[in-house]
Image 1 (cartoon, rainbow over the protein chains, first blue to last red):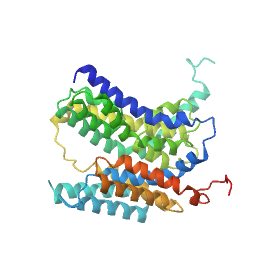
Image 2: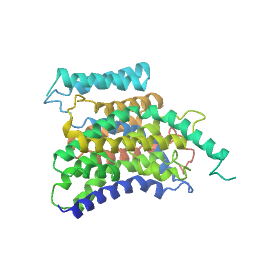
Image 3: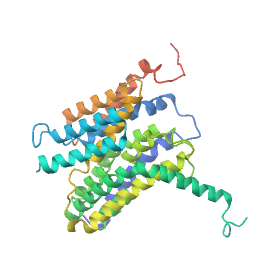
Image 4: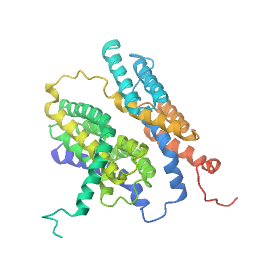
Amino acid sequence: MSLTEQLITIALCAATTMGTRYLPFLLFPSGKETPAYVRYLGRMLPSAIFALLVVYCLRHVSLTGGSHGIPEILALAVTVGLHVWRRSMFLSMAAGTALYMYLVQAVFPT
Amino acid sequence: MDSRFSPSPASTAGQSVARAAFRTAFPHTIPMLLGFLFLGIGCGVFAHGMGLAPWVAPVMAAAIFGGSLEFVAVSLLLSPFAPFQVLILALVIQSRHLFYGISLLEKYRGMGWKKPFLLQFLCDETFAINYSVEVPFGIDRGWFYWWVSVLNYLYWVAGVALGSAFGTLVQFPMKGLDFIMTSLFAVIFVEQWLREEMHVSSLVGLAACLGSLAVWGPDHFLLPSLGLILVALTLLRRPLRRYAGERKVEGP
């Protein structure tokens, strides 16, 4: 791929990304009333999207091979459990991530 | 009044508003400071290791600012030129921003000059924070959103630049640190769950994504998931109307 083609490829990625970021705000500008259906989606989507993001982060975890997803499941359980118990974002994230790092480095090294 | 010589009361007040918002926003971005630097360095090392020139990854980080697409773009840049395929892939991977935008329409209303920045720098993590954090009373919401957006952007670009420049020289003892992103989204999911009066959307999201992942696999499940969520929520609108707090009633 030539330099020009590389730059075109990057520019295409950037332009498409910006398009997806700007489009909702261009379609439904602040000045005009947003259709009820879109407002409904705006209220309902976030919970589903957060579920999507969690699954997306864990999409390459295999339950049948490697460490069988054990580090991910344990760390996720600790994160969620701590959060339900203490409701402290920092504590839940720090404990879950620290446990995960320990598990993948010391218990299930690849 | 000549503001070059004596700062106008308005601009002093503006600065302190911005500074107060920074002090509130920064702690919320600390997980991303760690996570983005780590992942960014990883992305830079990856791009460089795959044989791309050291400037490519930082330029992509600054221009695209989307981790997943940048990783994919590395392999696209090493393949024969295929603009149409690039367009489709970028659209598929980034289509979730449409959902963020729709969810943030109300919050980002009336943001003036900050709005282009908020949109330009919108990413998963910024959406997650700006959507879920209740900005404390007395703190300017616009500045808060702006700082979160800008800081997350800078962390990522800095991480990629560092990785691209020095990554090959350093060994990582930090394996697994990327779980901080997973834990961020998990915590916000739980937080939403504990706050919402009904869990329809959370359950729809889990079912649609896990189902799609099982059927289409890790590389192709994103778009079907988004589609299923959209269809399910649209079908559920009528039954849920009362709960969703819509006051408009359209006919029988």
